[in-house]
Image 1 (cartoon, rainbow, N blue to C red):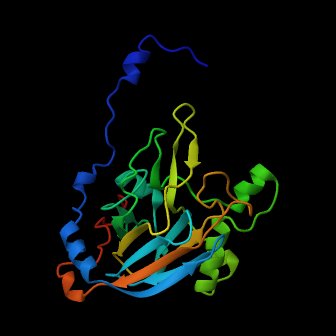
Image 2: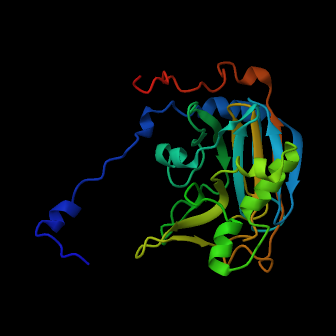
Image 3: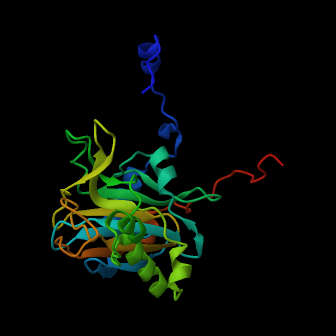
Length: 281
């Protein structure tokens, strides 16, 4: 290890500066969403089996919920523009613009060049959790997704029901794609219900048992036409291990709701970034 310079304490004392001020983002319209939510009716639902994934469609202006129904279970969520799979959820930019863990009022942002909100979180029954003594929170946009490539690197064995593979199969089935075509569209996820953080000493990514219980849900408003894919993670509640068949796992439920049209009078959809795209040329 290199020797510390004489001004090490002064260097470490530099004040932190928020990179992206989220008070410059459009305000969360709590009252508008509350009115719309009070009128919504369930129009569809999809059950996601344990250690598997399913796709679902949500028209712009609708709500959808991911619901715990039988036991403590986390899920990995991918989102795309239903009409253009090249526009997809951008977890890294969401992490920068919102936080490492998201909750009510936060938006899930889409990829370049659109860079627009794809979905807004309108209700979260786990918002009480906040930050625990280990520095962990719920619903993270830190982790990528469990995958068979990393699992093989660490364990030396093939496991086909990692979230990456689950999402790949689900998208292939939902859009009649080959596995190779579908896999190119699978991307970093929102870890729904997952409780995670970084260790205080080594700053390693860790997971712990999720606080989710049957009846808990996280709810989103679709800012654009969405195609979603949700995997019920083979890690169950991620309190012990993942990427195996020994951990207890449970299904998750996706519910789609339609509000009365006149409860969203000034909502006109989500606008793409106004950047010219010239890149200085």
